[in-house]
Amino acid sequence: MMNGGGSHSLRSAFSYCVQQVRNYDYHHYLCLLELPPEMRKAAFALRAFNVETARAMDVASDPKIGLMRLLWWQEAIEKLYTKKPINHPAAQALSWTISEHNISKPWLKRSVEARIRDAQREVEDMPESIEELEKYAEDTVSTLLYNTLQAGGISSTTADHAASHIGKASGLVLLLKSLPYHCTRNRHQSYIPSNLAEKHGLLVKQGGRSEILLDENSREGLCNVVFEIASVANVHLLKARELAGKVPPEAKPVLLHSVPVQVLLDSLRKAHFDVFDPKIQRGVLGVPPLWFQLKLKWYSWRSIF
Image (tube, rainbow, N blue to C red):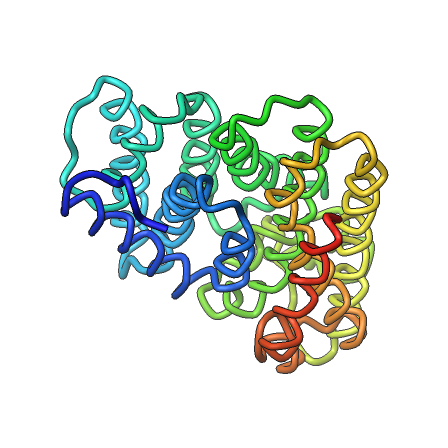
């Protein structure tokens, strides 16, 4: 996979990227293995960049440190486009990818800027609607798919359109999966829209500010909220698949990111949309790893997404 990568340091940088994706984004790691060999290096560099920015707030002991890390990446993107060297393996791999594949800067910028805005929000600042979550998913996940298509030399409006829908669906379901984790870090309110929380009896007003109540008594309301968000993700997945006949064959391996979305939606359905059901966190998105890999291979072999 890493042939033609140039120097030893560049090979090390790509090895780091592969390892990061494997460790922290395993289902997408498996998806990237289905790409043609000539696309994999760029795809792993882009996905590792996403891992670094997505985890910035989670690995920091202090939110300010996490935000500084994101601002560092924002500055790093500017430097990479002016050919300034950066001593970070993911940045080195990204630098090679940008120059080798003429990667668009705006999409990379949009991704990190969306994460910075998210990091700067106060805990009580909730999105008002699912549309805000969709925008966040588009900015962080769809942009990554656009860049991956670009790295493969694939220029297709239809493929971009399908990638937009798959990115939105992926972003929404992964926010749902991470809700239990964010609850422990007191960031759960960031990802439950206030209009849905109010509709399903989760919103309480205390001391002039709104809070979301998550306890045993509110479990049913939360399941209803999760069902509504999952339903929107499912619509995006269906819209992407409606475009399948017009998507060029070379773009379809990039769009295999639909498989984790489908698997997670199925796992949520089986758990009656209870994100706290421990089964959802088992294996790969709630299914045995081998089963996930077989489903992925089946989609890849049939050239569908």
